[in-house]
Image (cartoon, rainbow, N blue to C red; front, side):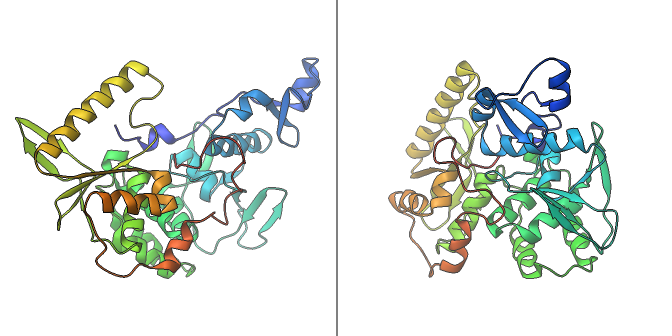
Length: 335
């Protein structure tokens, strides 16, 4: 099942946090062997921190900041944590909105943003953040284009719990004085599609385009053997089917549900093959690395129909807005 925005939204810290003051009151002295300093004056257990995926570490840092600055207004990736907008890897900075029109600045890992255009401010479980429309438009201006597409898709996809319509995003951007990223926004608006059911599908669509393959049909439906099956992609010229797997699709925290899902997937895929469809399957990491996705398509008989776009493919590399991935730990999928 697709992950909903509500599933991704993190309105409380993923791990227990304690301030230095509260630790002192409890007679606890933070130890570097047992505790990880999330930010100055805020700690968590080191074992808990090391078990977190990159996006969970970022969410923890955001909530650690709110612990000491509860009245701050989150924006950009920090607001995305609260809305459940997909993030990739661990964002480098905490982003907050200044009430003043001028005077943006940075302190430590916190960037204080000013703005010429008004922003709607919402409150979630006592946390203030820019509204969903503003957050999505602001991110789409700044993050790499494939990630920007996943942001737009998520907030307009009913399957992902997105409540917005594409025209709302277009209109908000068009009404703003800020002209940064206009070309990127046009690219995103032209391709955003509410049929996309995951960040992996959104990124895959960008990579399929940039590597020169034909535009696939989204969420095609097939009727055979008395069953109705749906796939992520269908490539019209060959009738091949593409499946982009993402984390959370198989209820991995519940082994029995995961096993049942996998068995249903196998039976569905077998029906598609018996119906004459070759099946290409890949994961988000394959799309980000490009060549594994291309190999999966080629093995399914899908061939490029135009020249690739190397400049756009380079934007899939490490995002300038994210921390470098840790040498050991989780891969950097979207959540």
